[in-house]
Length: 418
Image (cartoon, rainbow, N blue to C red; front, side):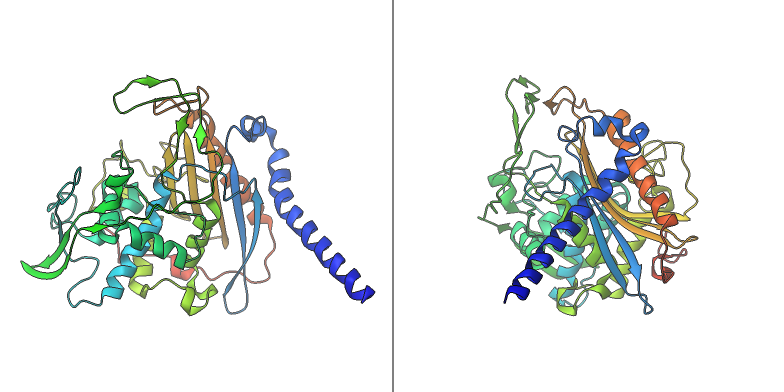
């Protein structure tokens, strides 16, 4: 009995040591580069930094195995997730289409969206599509290429709030909720109502979905919901009170990386835990989440407004004037709002066989006023994300691997492009 007790104490001690090593690795890696991270290291709490880095090692069957390291990771410490919520919405929309099993309904089926409650808007044309008709697939393209807000709002309306949150929980995102549309002041009762939608082909009705209402509020125990010292309200007035993030979307960093893992590496999960997607769905998402805007003709993007690295924060730093050759790709979904920058990425160097997962949030709002549009993205957050991505990449270049990964499924020609 005494021996068993001693063994248990040793095991607990080892686990505690391993967990501390997991958190110390990134801390030490950052601290030896003050020339890159001084602005963050001087005030990590105010900068709201959380980091989750996951190494990937393949076995002889090319199956991935994961080892994770974190810095200040806390699922209960709130940050505004901004556009990062668009990736699960894209996945869930494709899942829903597959589960409906309706003849003629797929991601390319044209749709019309009506209005049935206050503030809702209609849509029956999409001028950025080749056929000028909206569809779930085209909305997903716009989300993954340039993070289009209206496209996300339309997926939110197709799914309905209850279904989005059911799927989050089903797939293990237990510290998250998606309960608002984006960029239209959607909150409270307005957010609980979603529009009626009709799918059709050649004027033939394929599927009709009635307006939906979700009475649930999805409460979560969160810290850090009240921030700053003032904010600009909907009437452009300065309100000298802290800003409240209560009643808004929540997408914890570990949940973000979990969804990314399931999306990119379904083979690492039991069949019952995988997304209900087919091979074409996976290729479709992989392709568009890794492309630069100029690699699309529909939608066609102005390079002065949407430059090549517009949607790529980690490693690329969203820098203008950079024209990547595609040898290094970021399969990612970023977000930026209220001074927060978030990027949830799988970064791949095909030539050198480098691959890793990195999810990061950082904030810079020096005047502590929200909604004034004055945030230090260019000076603080973009350089931090670029430098951190490159630092981890350089570490991965040197890290020995027993098996070189076969990354073929992430390499695309022109079959899905334009």
